[in-house]
Amino acid sequence: MSDGNIMKEGGSMCRVRKFNTVLVILLILSNIMIPRADADTINKSSITLKVGDEYTLIVSGGKVEKWSSSKPGVASVENGKVTALNVGTTTITAKTSNSKITCKVTVQQTDNTKYRKNSYYANKKFKPGYYVLFNTNDSGKATFAIYKGKEVNIYNTIATDTFKYNTIVEVKKGQTLYMENCYAMEMSQAIVRTTGEGIFKVGTHIKAGTYKVKPIDGADISLYAISKKWNSEPIESMQLGLNAETEITVKNGQYLSLVGCKLTNKN
Image 1 (cartoon, one colour):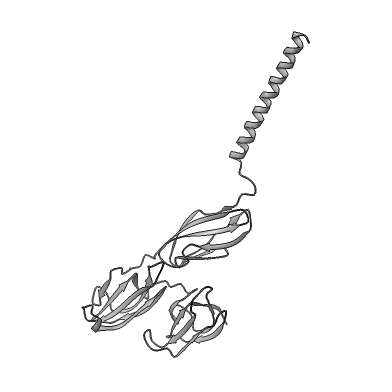
Image 2 (cartoon, rainbow, N blue to C red):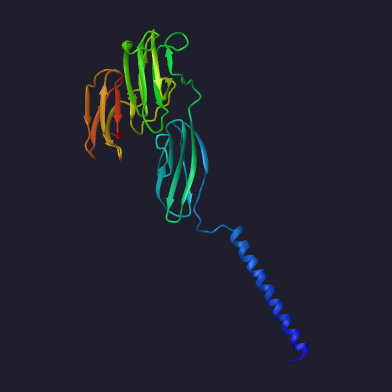
């Protein structure tokens, strides 16, 4: 083979190697710069909501097989619809066939006055009246007690109880409200979530009428109670069996307590 042919062949091989190198670089850049068409994405990686707010997360790419919340007491999720329930932070996860994508949700209370100290004596600064207490303990229950006079003393106890999401109390003039793992808001200012368990005043938090009550999945016990006053004995109550469903009718001014169960549709 002549020197000229060797030079031509060498030049051709050199051009082929350069072409291959450029092609590899282009392929690498395309993988880095151009997202895969089948990559799952969510419209928000983090959101901040007020208690009672709702926001719908949207996943693009794969079909969502399951939505979940790391702290369902802070914010719940159903088919991508996030409902802010209580102050705190949680992570919403959308599981698809390809991946798990998340959104951090921060829930703040409304701008109304919140009473966060352990105890308050009902006078001019802490007005006598009805208050909604909200649990701040993500992993357990909150406790309250109402005492006669200023002294926090077991012998002066008027009422005491524990609760998971919220409760309603009346603090009269000359009484002391004591709280652990919760805060209080005047009932006229509080936004109460009614999609799960809790205590609700009919006519204020829910409308009077007929409802279906259904156990919450995974609840240890499911029961409801209807009372004329916030601290009176129930005029109607029932413990629900597993996967059972019942119908109740509530009137304005009554108090409905739900433990391990929730309201579904209204007739």
